[in-house]
Image (cartoon, helix red, strand yellow):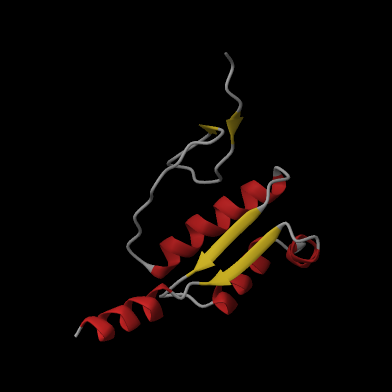
Length: 102
């Protein structure tokens, strides 16, 4: 059985079989942006749908700005609905749950 390899765009990870998962830790905001932008770019260039749930320390505007810097055709991917950027509400949810349990 031959498993098709997919480009991750993340140099330290390399190509991986379709359906694989990986986790990457980062030290700085710049590390986070570099990794996720490269990952999204590779996916879009390979005709895949990309979803980025943006969370602190970033805002959706930060993610969009960095994606545009790396991909001049970003607006086309957005208009074709091949890329979706959503703001994570996890922090807000955790705060609400904590408040209710106090």
